[in-house]
Length: 174
Image (tube, rainbow, N blue to C red; front, top):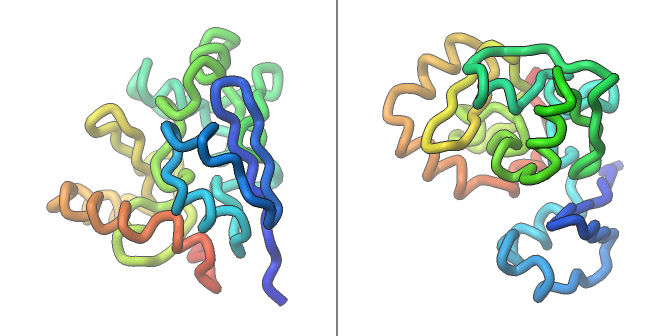
């Protein structure tokens, strides 16, 4: 049986919840494309790669931008956003994320960018990452990262076309 996930969109301090109900598109139209709202509302996999209730294996996503490094987050600096718990290494990083989560949240919900380009949904590892054009991209492995870095612009176009539809893929590559 296919499980469904509740879609929660936090936009400018407003939480919009949908479980098969019509969302007020005028509220979210400037932030999220209406087609994406309908696709994410009921999917097989959650919109954010989450293990044990924590986004992205507990990594501080802000640190990828501010320190250009992989930094483990702490439960002392956590935040609920987009249906999951995010961990940060400091109150300052948590607060930066809270001010503008879309600026720091990884593309494709933290699932593997290279896999998304191929229409596959896959987990990621914290050390296979890249900030490009002000956006964070994570990958499944060092090999996937190397492949991602070959003709990346084409892969971004492909992954954007596949997202968020791949959230309904039957399998999640681990």
